[in-house]
Length: 99
Length: 127
Image (cartoon, rainbow over the protein chains, first blue to last red):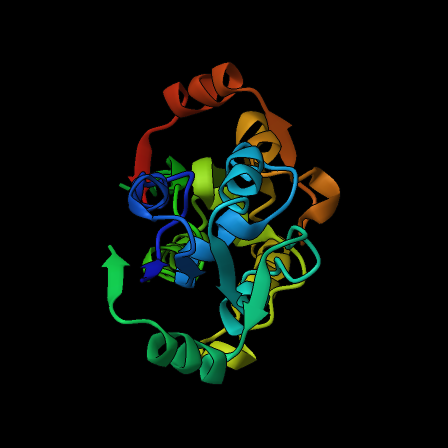
């Protein structure tokens, strides 16, 4: 399954909730303010690193760049463009959008 | 009898910015209101707390999401005599940011100091 998260992990708990329900091998795509979870050296970065052991985490590059986070994305989080977003949707059986 | 001109009413306005810049319209709307308030020669301060600190980060490039990048506008505030920008220390720290990552010079303050700044205002507008 593909999970998308569009809220900042510092302002909402949807990212945390997503990780709770994301099973081994799932993909998590961070979009909009959700991309802040991809930044290194933050209060949530350890949690993200832990999650990377069991799920794939992607961040939407245009949203990352809009927020000036392009040089802060932690190792292990993969950047995708809009085409990559579509590919992820096609590759997975269902999409869960955490709002 | 000559009528005395009343002193121009000037109040202390604080704009509290709590939200990240592009996910909602709050940040841009706040900046618009700040510029209007400044044109009325009020005593304006800006506070950035929580995700609000993200509004000031350097390197924002919004071409890919086809939205306005208003972060350079913060650099123009000085021309409107808006120079009191307060940023919450803990918010920066939790997000792995320092003052050097911000587009304008700011005063980084503790939550306690921020609370004092809020107490000293006449009007607080929160975005």
